[in-house]
Amino acid sequence: MARLVIKKDILERSLSNLLAFSGAIIVYFVILNLSGIFKGIGNFTRMMSPFVYGFVIAYLLKNPMKYIEKFYYRLIKKEKYKKLIRGLSISTTLLFSVVVLTGFVSIIIPQLSDSISIFISNLPLYMENVDNFTKGIVNKIDFNSSLVEQFLSAFQTLISKTSEIVSKLLPAAVNILLSVSGKLVDIIIGIVVSIYFLAGKEKFAAQIKKTIFALIPQKSADYILEKAQMTNRIFSKYISGQLTDAAVLGIICFISMSVLRMPYALLVSMIVTVTNIIPVIGPFIGAVPSIFIISMVSFPKAIGFAILVLVLQQLDANILVPKIIGDSTGLSGFWVFLAIFAGGGIFGITGVILGVPTMAVTYNIVKEIIENRLCAKGKPKDTSQYM
Image (cartoon, rainbow, N blue to C red; front, side, top):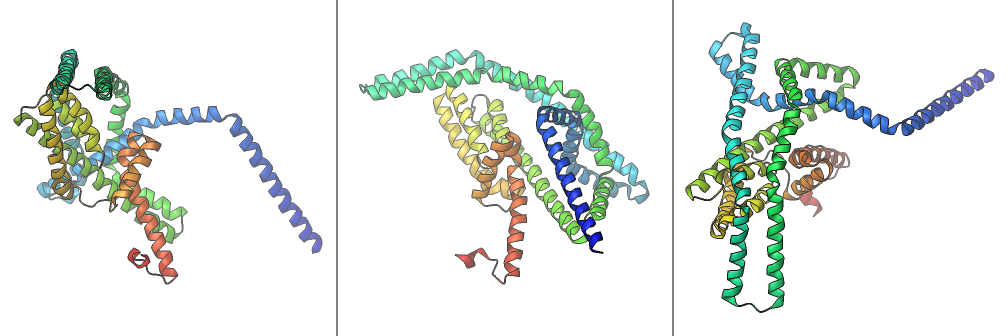
């Protein structure tokens, strides 16, 4: 019996050593072929990009399709035509999206391109106006201080450098359009993939649940599905709310600038719309280049636009955001700022836009874990109790 135990112990140690040795060999070869592995991952990612586009398109369209599908159910009132209603809903949603995008490209883009071209062609004249303006201030006030002269010189240098950057906007925009057109095939395939996602979204969700319940214990599976539903709810409400809020604010900005006869109303409104997708700091990011563009034409109108931006932000913060988005994240200002800067630092512009809902999901999960542990220890979970 003792001899059998010794043999079993030797066998277990031999197997353990063999596994460790095999693991070391695998790690060694992974390190040697690290560049090839990363290249393979990159190729796989590029190959799967149509499916990523398809998932993103389907996720953005699922909420509009839900309302369209409800309309068709009220109109047809026959459960047996479920597949027909689903097909009509997908077709209507895609058709509506194509019409909106086509209208945007055919109407907005040419005018936007014209505005950028006119601004760049008039840039020397605008620079001369700025130079005359600064010289007029110096002559009227009769500054003799070398420090002030240095400041004005630095200011003119800043304006010159900024104008050089702005003058490169059009080529950059062309390059972006070319890169998008280069991925046109992937986008078209992504649209086809999105149709499959939308057509079988309930079945896909059921298959994922089935797999989770099969591989994971019941309690853990329930927890994962609960958090997945929370994540979907937060992301869906936040993304749709941010896009709607940015579009509404951009339209209000365009109408206001047109009524006040401010220059480059469409160009500036587009900048405000795009940057307003970024929460909290987005409006300020959009205001800086917009004020600069308008100041090239007229300083008084640039000041008027700065006042208009402050009014629009008050309108957005106190009326539009509470009505459209509401408290979809439940985060304080500190966590929002942290999410924006951390997300932007790690994942770039995608991290800036999606950092806040990601932080909201993480915050809720960590908060629940901490509160459950406190309850298990008989401690209060209210933060005010620890102040």
